[in-house]
Length: 102
Image (cartoon, rainbow, N blue to C red; front, top):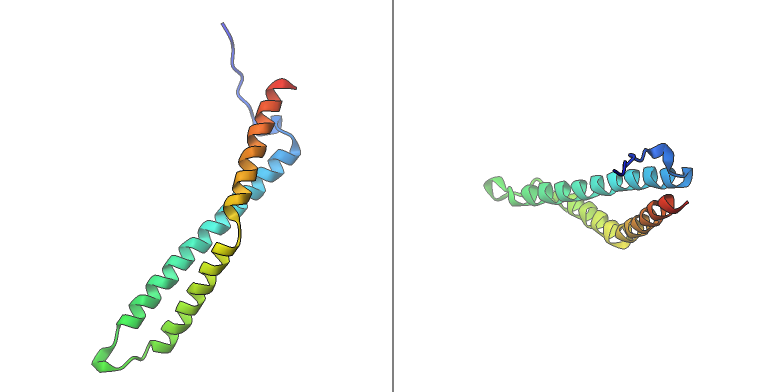
């Protein structure tokens, strides 16, 4: 019968562990940006739709929030987070394959 040993983080090279930690940190930052972007755009839409007695007291803050939301959307679309994730997946696959060989 073949015994399969579990692999711990200490079994991987230090470079792998550093890349893994950097990836998790980047993923958390990306997720925070996406959540912030969605929240800002929803709040600005709600603010812009509220007009008591025909006045728009929240027009300027709403416009500022929409501008911030558009800027965050631009930042998310211009940074290539998915490309970095793909490179990490390739590195993980290669290091796991080499770990069994070496």
